[in-house]
Structure formats: C-alpha cells, structure tokens
Length: 334
Image 1 (cartoon, one colour):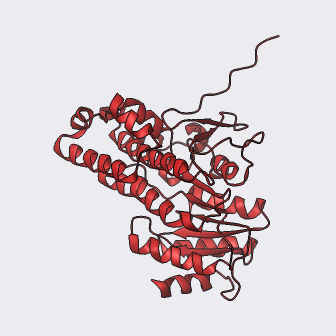
Image 2 (cartoon, helix red, strand yellow; image 1 turned 120 degrees about the vertical axis):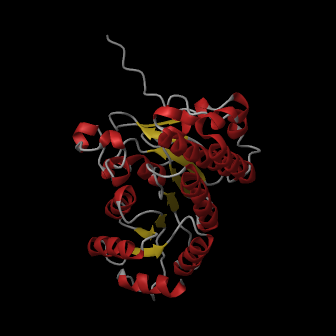
Image 3 (cartoon, one colour; image 1 turned 90 degrees about the vertical axis):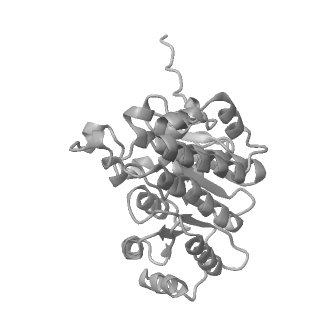
C-alpha cells in the first residue's frame, strides 16, 4: 500500500521533496468524481494558498482526477488512496498525509464525502455511510489544526428525517451528545442490521427505528437515512468532546451526480427536470463550513450543528441533527 501511495503521488505531478506547508491544506474523501471532485476544484480555484489531498478508493480514477486538477493548480493537489471501509487503507492514508505535512503544520480541514445511496443493503449503507464516516473522521482528526480546524461530514436531509421517525427513547439517546459515544451508536447500527435481517421494515419499527412512509415505499431511503443519522450523531458527539475544532454536518440537497441519478424516480430526467443543483452548487455549504468565519454573516454559527443552504442558495441555515434547517420567514409586506 505504501508503494501505491508513493506511485500515485508522483503520477499526480507533485514534488515529493517539498512538504506541504499550506495553512489551508484540506483532505476530501470520495473526491475523484461528483461533489467530492467539485469541492476540490472550488477549493483550489477560490483559495489560492490551499493544498488539496484528494482521497479516493479507485486508484486509476483518483490519479486521473488529481492530474486533471493539477493542470490548473500545479503542485497544489495530490492523490491519496483511501477506502473508508478499510482500517488498513485509512491507517496508510493517515501515515502518508502526516508525512507530507511540513513540521508544525496541520490540516486546515477534512471533509467526509465518500458515500453510497441507492441499491445497497442496509448493512452496506451502515458500513460506508456511518462506520466509514466515523473511521475517516476519527483517524484524521488528530492531524486537523486544533485551534479552529474544520471537520465537515457530508450528510443528507434524510438523516434528520429518519431520526424524527425513531421512537422517543432512541431520539433522546442519539441527541445526548454530551455523553454519547461511538460504541453506543455502533451497537444501535448492529441492532438495526440484525433486526432488518430478521424481519425487514416491521422489525426496524419494532426496535424503535421506523422509517415512516419510506419503510415500505422507499426502503433504500430509509436505510440511507439511518446510516446518515448515525454519522450525524457521532459528529455531534465529537463536536462536544473537541470544542476547539469546528465539527459539523451539512446537507447538500439534491445534487446531480451519479448517486442521484441512480434513484429510480429520476431515471430518464434531466437535471433541470429533477430540480437538482450542479455539483459545484451542491458544495456551497461545505465551502462555507470549511472557510467561513464562525458567526460571520453568511457563514456558520457554532459546532455540532446540521447545516444546509436556503432554497435560493443565498444563506447558510442551521439546526440540530433531528431536523432540517427551516427556511427564513418571508419578509412581511409593507
């Protein structure tokens, strides 16, 4: 794995002799396409002093993505092999990124973007979207700047929605970020997988993790929402235990990527017909969480929160992880 990292790094066109001394070094998982690639592209274009570590599971695609971005930002982007479902892969990626940072330097931020959506079993949803996010964030958090560094978990509005369908005891447990630990979250995830194996949606409902109308009409959304819900709960717990780091989740909304296009309801539709944002538009919330000033106008306010852009994409809205951010009230007629 180490040899693969070095080979990929050289293929991406970076200078192995020059440590990364950028004060705005960012690592993005799942970055060889879609929103992850768009985020890397915007970071490099809008932050002239930024350096991007482009994490991707597929080496060929990751190398190609880094090369393409490197043409426009020479020496500022490099590919890092990163499979968030593998302890060994994540550990190797941590070792590599740590070795690339100049002495005394940290990552400005990390973005947990890798994920799956439609056509996957509940167990796989949990392994990628919940445990994968946790594995990535926990492993790289020690490399993040301890005084105001940024951690962004790319989530979904399905997380708060499915948490809203959970019973009162489950909601209370997941919302108690001050004492919630990953072991408890993971135990719930295992419980969900076992319940679904025993009796499907009815058994998930019985143990307190129902999916409302999605349970039968769109179980893939139910399962996706469960995984994102657990990732959000871990995010909130980390934010409580690391108060000097800005740790948040964000919902990009419906974004026209291959993940969205895999959903049957969008089959054969154009982006405009689906009402979806472009990947470049979809990463606006993540950009503000990465580079905005906490509490500044148009930026974010606080850690351990769930963020989304307003419908007109002009404002960054926030809530707790059990509900999507509400749109601001319309101005009163004079």
